[in-house]
Length: 255
Image (cartoon, rainbow, N blue to C red; front, side, top):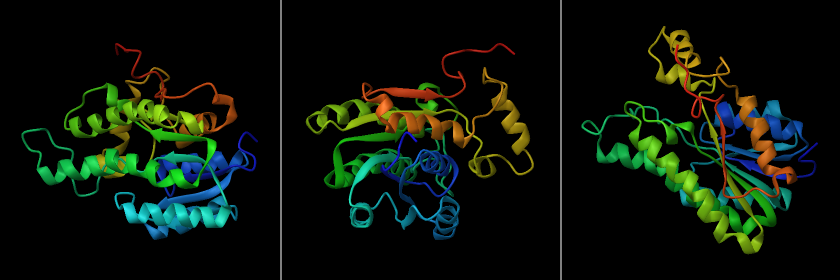
């Protein structure tokens, strides 16, 4: 019970990696709130997590939503011990283009969701967070590897890794630790959105071929790592990136 009696807020906790993190937190004794834009998946996820968790519908790219979200969570639980800034990723209907095909609107959408919202999520949470609490930003192994069409997304996630350092310095007096957790390829519903219809299994296998541990990651793998960074077990760690990618970034396979 590494998070017993801790109150945690997980943005984008209604599906995929975020829900995997919320489940891991619940299993370690935490209570708190998950957020998301889709009310149906939010309600379903809360039912699975049980009575110690609530759902807060919010758009993390809207600062007023963020302020209201943290106010409501604080009024419900009286404190916030851990914040996981998970909301982000691909945007439905907005492809990840190469630079010759990119639009200003698409660039702004990806940066708003994957960088700007991270910064202001932390800012709006701070008035309600306890001194000595933990913040976990979700980065991506994409920050370390170039891939077709992913320059904007990768740049945003690289900036998130840098944010963990700068924000840790900003918050030293309050002893609030900020670290970043960077997943590799994780088995989530995102595959169904990004892979061509009928080719999901082939796309997954192509990724497996690149991963030294010979499998795609699971949301639970990220959840366990997030528990560590949110718990007192990582009290001597701040401003650091933890890569959870099965070795894909640091070990090259010749297959």
